[in-house]
Image 1 (cartoon, rainbow, N blue to C red):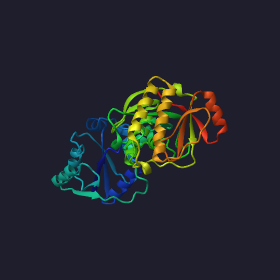
Image 2: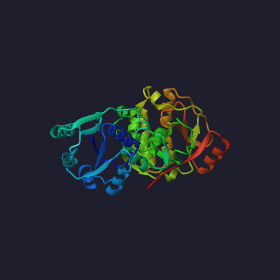
Image 3: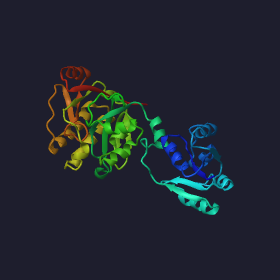
Image 4: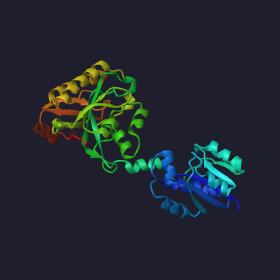
Length: 360
């Protein structure tokens, strides 16, 4: 009888484990699955298992291709199963191509006479997942805000960042979810950052990989009316709840989808953008809607000089600018008071009211 041995944490069992066990079992007649005990998991990774060891053992033992399950207690990193392996002396130790302890496992096989087999990657029968991705999915929020940027946009892109300057933005409601998205897509409101967060992915890595900046996932995670320090990574200068903007914001749908990565290399006046953010920062610091509007309007002049189409005049507005990189998507409009905002929203189909959102 040929005995096959596999080991791992198997902390959250998924279909990828099932496929691995089936492929490993095909190399012999008897499959032994070893997993690290809760004590070992804490010793090496400083985390607790998802379920107690006896429950995990019972689940593994329930797989039709598994003949024996062992809970290991050794403290050698990557070889917590060494004592059991030497006792059992299986014919094969089977690992996957991405096993990070291959070298020490191969040495153990040479010591005991077992054959070391690396299974090649085979087409998965299910979309691949990992234990860490499942944890992130479970921990992901069910709802998230989008955002409007007020001034300093592009200074969150690492290669355009400027020490001592700022980015000013605000998380907004209504919130979005994977089932309900009450805004247009590809619209300049930080949808890709929110989508990554809702799916349990790292929004910062997703945005930087697109060649754009970090402000979307930063304010979506932080919430509130925020002033950030320009730089390679988000550092919060200060924030407030944005109550003085309640009833004073609306977004206007231009009817054209927005593409920030496509315009990232366009020439623009970064000196004026930085100046706009300094003014807007003062407006946030003193809850001064007029000063904030001054910063927003100054930023908008850089967008027009960049070649963006003029935005429509809407009565009673004190500021306007394209959200995100512009050239379409939503535009932000600021109003002096809620009454004027609500009147304009009622008579302008492309305009919708949004409010500051702050989660304490």
